[in-house]
Amino acid sequence: MDLLPSALIAGFTAFAASVIITPAIRWCAVRYGFVAKPRNDRWHKRPTAMLGGIAIFLATLIGYLIFVPKTQGSMVVFASAAWLFIVGLIDDFLNIKPYQKLFGQIIGAVVVIGFGMTIPLTGNQIFDIWLTLFWIVGITNAINLLDNMDGLAAGIAAIASLSLAAGLASDGQISELLFVAVFIGSLIGFLLYNFNPASIFMGDCGSMFVGFLLSASVLLSQSGGRSRGILSILAVPFLILFVPIFDTTFVTIIRKLSGKRATQGGRDHTSHRLVALGLTERSAVLLLYGLAISAGLLAIAVRELPTATSLSLIALFTAALTIIGVYLSKVRVYDETDVESAVRDNAVFAFLLHFTHKRRVFEILLDAVLITVSYYTAYDLLFGPLENSPNRDLFLNTLPFILVIKLFALLFAGVYRGIWRYTSISDLIVYAKGVALGSLLSIAAVLLLYRFQYFSRAVFILDGVILFVAIVGSRLTFRILRELTPTPRPAGSRPALIYGAGDGGEMVLRELRKNPEWNIIPIGFIDDDPLKREKTISGLRVYDANGSIEEICRREGVCEIIVSSKKIPHQRIREIRLACGETGIVLQRAEMRIEPIDPE
Image (tube, rainbow, N blue to C red; front, side):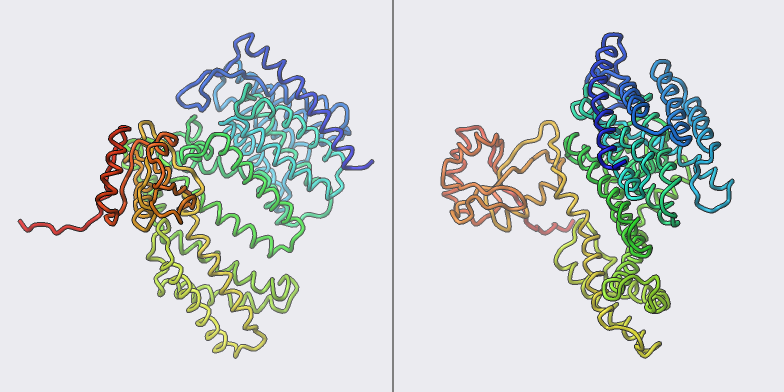
C-alpha cells in the first residue's frame, strides 16, 4: 500500500465528515441552549455554540472504522480516548469537579499503559510507567488549558499531529500514520468553523478527546519503526507538543507566583498576553501556529541530525523561547495589589519572584549556553559532527575553562551592565570587545596548556563570530519584540503627527512609545523638506508639510500636532497654529530642556 495516497484519502474523508457534521452539531447546540456565554474569566464576547468535540469525535470514528487497521494499539488508544470524550461530555453537561476529571484521565491512561504502551526511557518499568502516566495526563490538560481562544487548540493539535505524521511516514508505520491522518482531517474540518471568528467551540468533550488522543498517538509512534535513541524518545515528543507544554508551564508558574490557583480560568495565557501587547486575536493565534510549526520542523530535524547537533539546536530554541517567556511575563494581566499581597503572605513565592528579577543571573546562564553552543558549532561547521571525531576530546577537555574565561571576559568588558530594552550601537561595541577578549584569552590558555597542538585557530575565529551574533541577537530580542508588536490604542488615545522628521522628531517618537499613559499615539511625521516626503522613520510615514496640513490631519484622523524642534521658524509655527485653530487640532511643542534647581 502506498503510504502518502492512502493517508491523504483517509485524512480527506475524515475532513469531509467533520465539515458536514460540525454545522449539524452547532445547530443542535444552539437549538437546545448548549452555548458558552461570555464571562469575565473567558475570552469570547458573544454566546457561542458548544459541543464541537462531538463532531471531531464522530469524524475520527468514521475515518477509523473505514481506513485504520484494527491493531491492538490503535483499538486501545481510540477506546481510551473515547472514554475521555465521554468524561468531557459529562463535564460539558454537568460541570463536574476538576478532581473527577483527573480521575477519568488516570483511568484512560492506566488502560493504555496496561496494554504495554509506555515511554521507553530508562528500562525501569515502574519509572517508565509513572513517566507515561504523567505525560498522558499532562498533555490532556495542556490541550484543555490551551483551548482559550478561537482556533488555538484545534490548530495547534493539527500542526502537532502533522509533525507526528511526518515521523511515522519516515519510519514506514502505515497503521499509525493512517490513524493520525484521520485525526488530522477531523481537526482541520472542525477548524473551518472554530477559527476566528468561531461559531462553535469544542468544549471539554473535544479538548479532552483531542489531548488524550494526541498524547497516546505519540506512544503509538514509539511502538514501531527504527530503533530509538534517548534524544528521540525525549526531545521529539516534547517538541511536537511544545506550544501546549510551554503555555501550561508558563501559566502555572505565573499563577503560582501571583498567588492564584493553577486550575482557575483566566485571561493570562500566552495568547492573551500577545493580544495585550497589541496583536489582534487572529494574529496572536497565527503567531502561535508559527511557533508550533517551528517546533515541529525542529522535531523532524532532530530525528535525522547527529545527537550533538540536535542538542545545540534544541538549546538555542529553548533559550529563544525562554527570552520570549520572560518578555511575556512582564505583560500586566493581574491586579498589582493582588500580586503584592500574595508575595507578602507567602515566603516561597516571595523568594521565587525575587529570584526572577535577578536579571544578571539569567543573563549569565544564557551566555553560558550560548558560549557552549557557539564553540561546538564552530567545530561542527569546520570538521563535521564530533561524535566519532578526534576533535571530540579537544572540545570536551577545553570547554570548561573556555566557558569560565569567556564569561569573565564578558563581565570585565561590561556586558552585564546594560539593560536589554535600551541596547544601542555603543552596547554592540561592548559586546564585540568582550567576545574578542574572550577569544584572545582562550587562545592564550590553549597555547599555554596544550601548546596549540592539534587545535585549529579557525575554530576560535569562527567561534568568536558565532558568539557575537548570538549575544547581539539575544540582547536585541526585547527591542525586536517591541517593534514587531503593534502599540495598543487605549480608550481615549489621541492620534498625533510629529512636526519635524529629524533627530528631535525621532526622540519625541521614542518618548511617546515608551509612555503609553500619555494616551498619545504617533501615526506619522510632517516635514517641510521635500526630500523626506514619503520616507519612513521607525515605520511611520513622513508627510509633506508644504501641502495642506488640514487635509492630512482630516484624512488620518489626527487630533494633535507636536512640534519637535526649536529650529522651525516662528512664522511657520504661526501658520501651523492658524491652520490648527480652524480645524480644532491641538498644537503643542515638545519641551525637552535641562533647568537648574534653585537652592532652598
